[in-house]
Length: 79
Figure 1 (cartoon, one colour):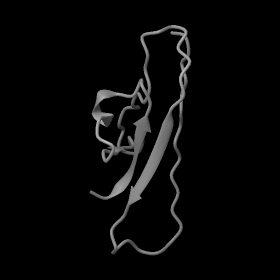
Figure 2 (cartoon, rainbow, N blue to C red):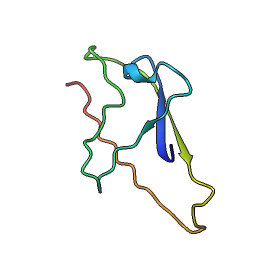
Figure 3 (tube, rainbow, N blue to C red):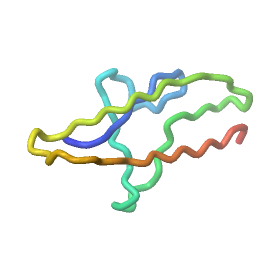
């Protein structure tokens, strides 16, 4: 599949990131897709780091040009 995706490396990553080769597609605001949780913890005072890796997979037929994407993060600590 072609597109822009990401994976998470962390103890609190969602279950679908078990395989190191899995990349989740980024939700698209233009397609009215919902935001996704990328880290979550049951511990109120959790102190943890994480690594997010982005991957772009495009068709060889993709026209040359300048493209951009915007990724928004919302952090809700201590909920």
